[in-house]
Image (cartoon, rainbow, N blue to C red; front, side, top):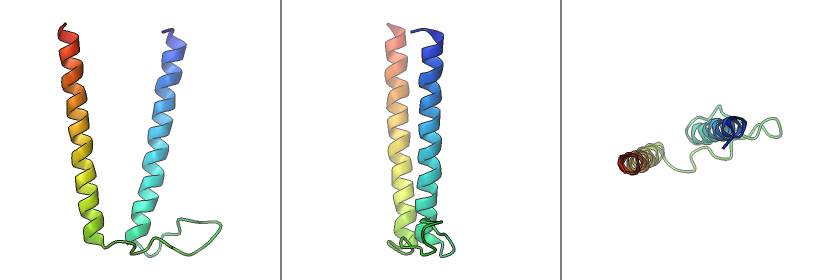
Length: 85
């Protein structure tokens, strides 16, 4: 793969990751903080406030973090095994 194509592919993944992180942070904060306005500038209401309890939200984040760690670990192991061959 030419260097330009590889750079574009990497940049695209970074942009997707940044956008996903930013907007998921807005959604998660909107669930627990009353001063958030996730639909601004279209609405000043927070329709996500207390959709679930803060405790459930925290456990969701812990579980998703554990799943992400497991996926990352498996990818590292698979890559290291394929590099040994």
